[in-house]
Image 1 (cartoon, one colour):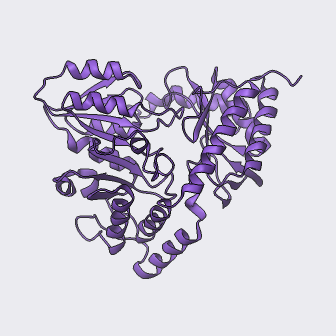
Image 2 (cartoon, rainbow, N blue to C red):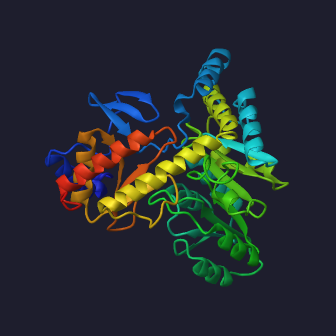
Length: 403
């Protein structure tokens, strides 16, 4: 009998070799206790969280928590059904109303996860004989949605307006086209040149979907995302997002002003054939989204944190993924897995949790530590974080010793 898991033997051996060095597994961390959006207990040690995507710190907001408790008491623990059958409760509609108010759109559709939102939109919007044109660095959920559908897939070089233009120009003029962009790319935290890309897409008659998973909450005057800050709201046809970043819970969504949008509830398989979110979850999401509409002070503080951490890390001698702070994600680039794991472990020992990323989540040969800042990180915590990076970097040999 052929062992179907034998194809993963090289990865199993690589992971075991890593564990044999005595380092903790970077991909099996357990939060024993979570005290706040910025503090947790890991292996008995109080640890600053710098790798949670909790950008706006909404997970412990008292109003958000109370909304979830009330819904749990009034509607029970779950729906046990799909949105198109028995799984739409009052709270699901209220959550969609909150999204429509936040984005200023006519339509909003809530999915059970952000992954499913992309899975659903990619596989449904473009079909046989049509094209999806996507950035080569697109998120796995976008690629997986493309694989689920029947459209032809065309990739262009990351953030290259010129390559997007060239590839669109090669496609049949009469064919349906969907250009898929992300406001913020999650690996290194760089943003897309949306103004220029949207202009190119429109020139070639393509529709546009923008994923604002990592931009919602703190880009733009209303916190809608990079597409708002770029001034292209009227030109983007669909905006996909998630509740698991700035909103502080779980779920996904798509908003749009397209007059035929509601038909997607009947034809989008990842929406139709899965259970809907529990009432407590959509209640927390709705409460959080309404508060994010008035979170200007939080947005300002988050940007202050980003500028301070980025500038401080560069001054210490670290190589970063972007020349300037472009988002709440700051990537510390490392030459190999050994140094990446060494830095990650040293930081955790000092009381700081960050994400370690390696292939296949990153391009081949790319190893990095991904820092995700939170609006609830105090200025003092950011200084602590810089001190921890300095100590770990010098101990591992990533930066020179202090003079």
